[in-house]
Image (cartoon, rainbow over the protein chains, first blue to last red):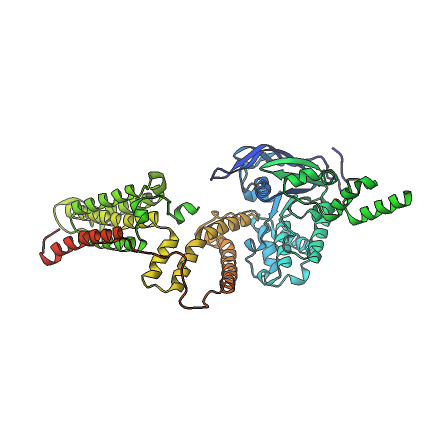
Length: 285
Length: 262
């Protein structure tokens, strides 16, 4: 157990799955035996093509789907014995489409809904709501009707409504889809802050640029299996495995791979790193 | 989910091949017949005939179980409730305070249940053997305005979509700690507001987008649109129509003109 900067033991497993299998009613085997540990403070991206099992996995992690066989343990308790509302205190899940969650007449009411459901006392609810509104930068919008906002804002409201329940783990399904570059960056910076404050983040995404820039650990899914679980540098140094699951690494990573024979390392992940490596190799040659 | 919203099962039987207009007329005729007949034995014969048609349409028990279970439950309910609320006739079989159970009332209950069974099952035959597209085509061909036909087709098409949408919204709210079945009646109906509002909003958004999509594909540009697949009555369809007409006309003639008690 290595304590992190925030005093939360790094190696503490919040979620762990053992031989997790899930089969949908129609017979589709969406998950085929996953062994996965999520540790406190992790910043994990789950990536994979459409139909690879990402969303099923995420729903299994917060108990919306109970394993067909195998186990999912949340803080040492099997999800099969817990209600979704109990798991929601530990594992929050922001759905891909914010319009599936929003129904209140003001942003503040919307954010309040979750903690009230969990039965926190009024004082605590108020604190949690304030923190969530601040974390998602919604102060200006708090009195407005969520459904009247733009998509990027609605997404922030839906994420705030999950953060307000103060879960240890935050699962976000495709949080950057449909956002412009500015909105996306703002959202990702907010998530980075939350992670620095000790929240465990699990991103489900197609957006490999977001993965390269933010995630520390990447899980690649294909056909209901985990085909890779490594730190993000490891993932981007192996393009073949990404191709296998219909994912395309960001251009800067591909460029770095093309320049490999000129001495650029395989694990470049950002424009800054590539510039640094290029200048270095030029200076050296 | 889609299993009981669209009952249509693809197969190649004479009922599947029959012109959907004939099938609609047939269902109406057989429904009328169920009202004309008042003897239990005749109604049971009609019910048997309808089940024979279902069998010929290759409707298996597993496919029809959902629908038939519903009909059966309704029939049992009628058989139980009818005698309780109908105290007329003799002999009295049992009585408890103001409630009198009489033998004729029991028979009337069973007869009504058989009639309801006929009515419900005959409509299932139509749904089992006719795709929604053909059903709508038939209605339009029979004079229903194309807009209404299209509206019906779109509604049917989107039922499963909305089923999935509601499931997803329920999941999203459960993830926020909402327990739908918790609390008393009032609390529970309040819980459903959290599902209902996003459902309606999403439905309106979908409708809005859909209407734009339709317009961008020139919907409504001409009143007399053409069809890729047209319906054509074949000789066998006319035969079926004649047979069905006979099945209705003969008992109707017997009952109303010759005053035979059937």
